[in-house]
Length: 192
Image (cartoon, rainbow, N blue to C red; front, side, top):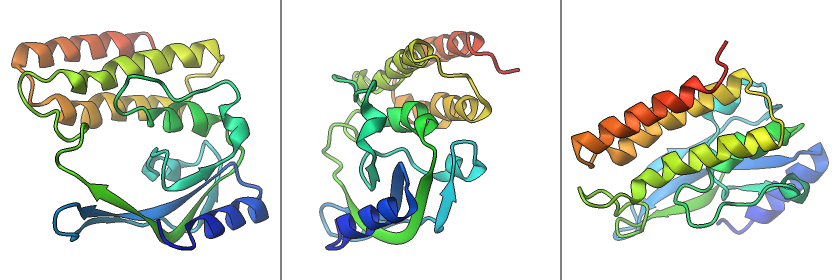
C-alpha cells in the first residue's frame, strides 16, 4: 500500500460518512516489478443501485469497510475467491459507497500463487467459485435480501466471464456439467 493509504481512505470515509471507500490499484509482476495493469476509479459517491458499481471490483483489499457491515456476515472459510461476498453480500448493505481516483494499492501478481496455479487439467479447485456462489445465494435468502437488478447482473458476471475463465482448463465434460449446474442455479433466481 502507499504511505498515505489508510489516511486517505479513512479521511474520505469519515468526512463523507461512507460505508466503503475504494481506491484504484496497480497490478505488478512479482518477478520483474513491471506494471501489468492499472485500475483507476472516478471520484464518485454512490449507493447500491448505482450503475457505476458494476465497474467497481469486489476485492476485500483496496478499500476500507465499515465494521458494522460484517455484523451477520463473515468471509467464507476454505474457498478460493472468497472476496466475492463484497459484491453480493456487503454492497447491498451499504448506504454510501465512494470510489476515489487515487491509486493507493499495489497488487503483486504471483504466478505461483494458489489462485493462479489452478490452471491444469486435473486441478478442480477452480470450481470453488461455483460452490461459493451457491452458498452466497443461500446466505442472501437467510438474510432476506431481494434479488434486485444489480444482484442479477453480478450473478451473471460471476457465472459467465469470471467462472468460465477460471475453469476453461478443465476437461469438456466437467465444463459442461458446470454449465448445466449454472443454468439450474439461474433458474432458481427470479430474473423478471
